[in-house]
Length: 190
Image 1 (cartoon, rainbow, N blue to C red):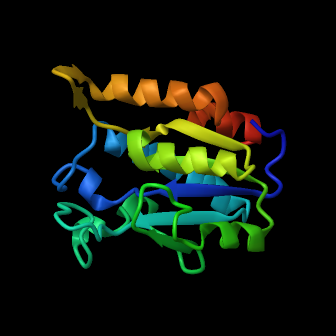
Image 2 (cartoon, rainbow, N blue to C red; image 1 turned 45 degrees about the horizontal axis):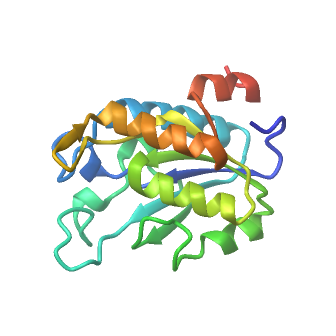
Image 3 (cartoon, rainbow, N blue to C red; image 1 turned 135 degrees about the horizontal axis):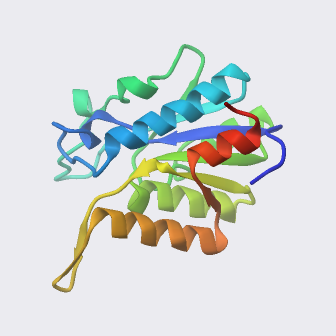
């Protein structure tokens, strides 16, 4: 993790209503992850550091969640953007693909990223890998991300197993993976 937060932005990926209880694609521990994401968001806001919200709108034929114009596609109230905070709309897992995220980061002078969001196994993974490939040092706040169970070849991996596997893989080469509490303590938070 960076020793200084100078030129650092917080990126909140797809913390949207459909991932929460009652939504169209509920994730395991989405509420708990949103609480931690909010703690990081408050920390960045208090220090006037850049915050970028990423919002996925599904445009794929047959999509079943994050549909345009639905309440489920809205950013969750716990991390709702304030006026003046950037919101990047995306249609693919990678938050850089066919968006202006890279241009926004350059305009802000951002050199490193702190990432929270959903799903660990899809959009967080794709975005963190892309960010690292673009040269950004990335810190992922593992408890401010959420996942769901997956099935492959007749075997089911539980949501905690999926979450752990993806974060372990990111931690091998693409990011530093820490808890929100550790990040806040090391960065000077409460």
